Image (cartoon, rainbow, N blue to C red; front, side):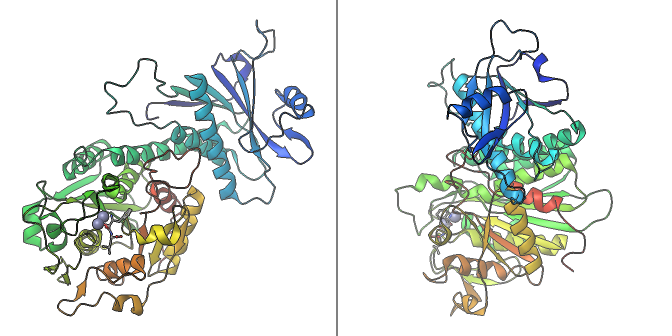
Length: 511
Ligand code: BES
Ligand code: ZN
Ligand code: ZN
């Protein structure tokens, strides 16, 4: 959780009193698992009895003799956790995800025994260095230990487990690298937890004003530039998309902008996140069943803002600008109607055929404004944009559409590294034709076929020639693939993908 203390040590672990001392073991076919020699005798005994093979998630729990004899551990409990087989040629990203999953198992083990602190002895792996091992484990534990209990007022018991207070990573060598990985893991996990917290908030608990407040605090804490375009200014600027979506709401819209520029002049990445704080569908009202889930329609905005939290802390060499067009989509008396025609910030006119296709309308203004104002080297937008992506890819891949192969490949690599896979879909003139309107430049729906792609076709009218990628997270922002470190509810998807993209950035790669 957010307040968990994470530290490193290269002192012998025997000397520390702790609730739980953890070792990790890798499986070797038909042989005793590979593990630290401190637990080898116990592991061998359990293996010979057929009780422990080191399979992924397998656990060997035991209690050191009491009273502790000399050279015995002062830990109250010892856990050996299996990682499964890790072949020398194993894909690095897969190994990182195995370690994150191990971290998730450890968070669950701590919850079960109500452990407040734990020491993890880092394994030495042939495939991954100490930095990656430390980062992945810390991410897994902190993300697995996540809980949202803010509104549990009267049902909260004094005995409820409040999470892990302290984690210590123990290593025999490379403590500097371990520390580096630990810090990165902590920064990334906390950013993801921030995104999950925002998403958990209901439509009355997280409005455009809350997005603005969070961004302003980030700006003050980390020295970022903050700007918020309010309704009056939007009207003057001609941001007809976000204004139309907001028409039926009692809460004003906001276009929130955060800018980070490193001391040394650099390229700039623009991130744009859909911040619909509740999507009722508007006049094209959604069915009642499951409508409450539409409080998650701001997960794109949350991902972008949470990534900025980590950017503020890490201060990378790349400039990063975040824009969140924020509003709810409500069917009030002055709501936009099907058939209405609007004009966007870049003069493009659109026929609104379905008011439930509102994400593209607010993103259109944000993309056009962001590109005109900041002239970024590339732009990535992220949005819970279409139900169609859930039909196409289920809950296991984020949909990716891009006008630039290099950017698409960089994002795919960053996502894979984060355990957040992306799947690219095509976009060409045939899909663009589907959103041609008889009465305006474009219309906001393109028919049943290829709904995810026609939504991206709409966005393509606002990016010009700038290298651009669109991420549709409607299937992954919540109910994402079951993993030990992904709880039910919002996943915080794309935060770590963005942080990898930024970290791996090579100047000039899109030229
Ligand atoms: N926020 C929804 C997309 C969505 C659907 C996200 C399901 C998560 C789960 C979006 O604003 C929407 O309503 N899209 C419509 C578009 C349609 C009217 C062309 C959809 O997907 O049904
Ligand atoms: Zn909608
Ligand atoms: Zn929506």
